[in-house]
Length: 253
Image (cartoon, rainbow, N blue to C red; front, side, top):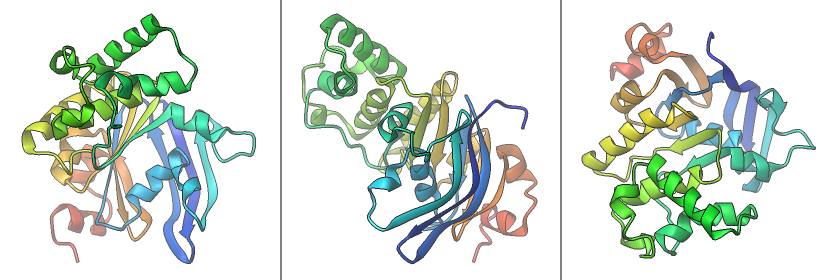
């Protein structure tokens, strides 16, 4: 891969109790590109990206082997601080989950947790994050209003702004458009295209058309295994594996 690699996985396996959910996955994730993970439900896509920011640490009975490096550092090493990993590798979930606070406080929450108290500095961070999430013009006169009053698409962009506020390097998106209508989806997709100028974006999606539209690289997963990983153009136009081709063309199963 000629790109700069930001995350590398080496023979990663994950179990939930007896369930072997991720099987021997090795891949390189490039910086400032969009990487999509596709595959049927339950194939391990979301589980894999939750390994990247140690969200699975919070799941009882979860066990992981192998190595995941972020900038060459093993994120599961004993000396690694998982809180710092989660700041640098942020996550946006399937269903928008704003806090029941004002628009402003949603975005300021993370910086406050990390010790920023100065109001002027917080104002700057909030505006910058909302602008980067393509939401500022829609909410700049509603900053003190409850975030719960925003539309679904606006709430999802607010959650993206909340992630950006703590200055991550990687943004994980787990089915970020599945709860949104086509217009809101197209806004999120346009935003993803802008975000990759500054961030590594990894998106899990069931929507193959979406993967084709927004991503530079695609990984196809099936039954916990990474069947094939490559440029999105190659995966969609000239897959190396028959299983990938069958999934892409709808002849699956």
